[in-house]
Image 1 (cartoon, rainbow, N blue to C red):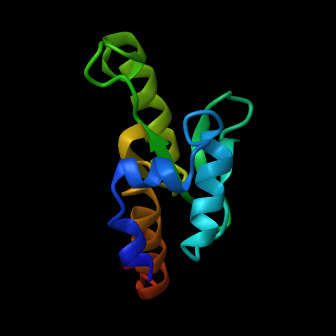
Image 2: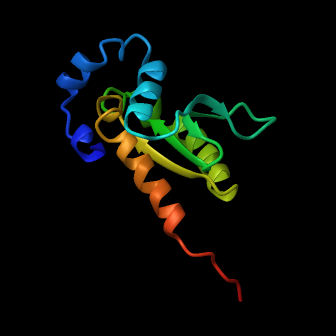
Length: 132
């Protein structure tokens, strides 16, 4: 069922979830639940005292989803100074053991839940790592 839901076009998603553009966090949360995923925490602060936040987060799974908007219109995620700050944030998240996934606003419903499901599935299937 999840695979079939992921094949929905953005136009179909807009019909199924008409509030996406008005309240994307609520709609995305409901969509995740409909796909059998836990509901995410939107705007989750992960590195106190820093004010860094993930767009959507599953804290118990240490999985985050970042929505990268404005990529082709000189938005925040494509300008030098802001991009360097984004790298600092994402490197700190990686060092702390977070798995950060990415999508765009246009692919939030079509790819976002599937990425989270795959990351969670991979985490659950990965054997415990032994050290040398």
